[in-house]
Length: 384
Image (cartoon, rainbow, N blue to C red):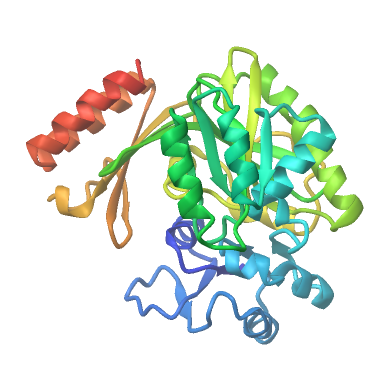
C-alpha cells in the first residue's frame, strides 16, 4: 500500500516507522524538506502547508491514502481539497477542526452541548478580564485561544500574578483568552479515531511535564470501560453530530484533555492529533493493523468497529533532554528522539514493573542529578 504522511514532526516519523514495521510491503512517504538517510520511508520535498503540491503528489504517484499529522495542513484545508479530488485522507475539514484550534470555540460548543467543563469566561479586552479575575476564586487557569503554534495553559494562585499575565497577553491587541476554574485533579488524555460518524477509543494516558523531562503512563487507571462509554455517548458523538451540521464531517484523530474525579469528568480541550510523546506510548501498546484502521477512517467505514486492539500490558514513557542521557538505543526499549529529547518507553505486564525497568535504564544512562529529580517526581505523581 502507498501511504503518505502529511507532516514533518516526530509523530509523522513515528507513524512512518510503525507502519513500515507492520508491513515491509508498504511504501511510506513523508512531506518534509529535511534530508534523511533512513530507508524506512521516502522524504518528499514539499512544505507541509502546501496542500496543492501535496494533492498533486498524491494524484501523480497513485497514493492510496494519506494520514495528516500537520496542523498547518489541516487548517489550510487539506481534507477539503482531497475530498473534492476524491482522495482518501484521515484528517478533518478545516472548518470542522476549528474546535481543536480555538479554545473559545471549543468552550462555546461544550456549553451548547452541555458537555461537562469547568466554569469559564472568554475575553478579548484586558479590563473586562481583569474585573473577572478580581472576583474569581483562586486558583484559576488562563488559556490562550488560538493553539496552532503553541498551547499555553497556566494555573495562577493569586490575583497579582494572574493580573501580570493579563497585561502581557493583551500587549497584542488581537489576542483572546479563556479563563476557567481550576479543578484539583490529575490530567488524563484520551484519543479516538473517527470517520465523522463513528468513533473508536485508541488509548487513555496520564502525563506530567517538568522542565527537563516528561513522564507518561498508559492506559490510565482512571478511565474505566463504563466511563469510556459515558464519554463516547455524552461528549464524542454529540460533538461529531454538531460539527457535521455546520462544518462537515470530522474524520481522523480526535483527542480530549480532561480531569477525572472518580466517575465524573471535566473536558478541557480538544486535539486533532496526538500530543508530543503520546503517540509513542500508544504505538508501544497497540496490537492492530494501523494502516487498515486509518484507511477505514479515511473511507468513512468504521461502523463495524468499536474498539482498538491493545496489548494486555502497561506502558511507561520518559522524555529526557538529549544532553542528559548518554547511551545508544536498546532493543528492549522503544526509543526515538527529536531535536531536543530522547523518548524512552518500556512496556510490561504491570505498571510497577515497566516503571522499575525504565528507571533502572535512566539510572544507568542519565547524570545522577537528573535521575534523583525523576525519582522524586515519580513518587509524587504516580503512586504505582
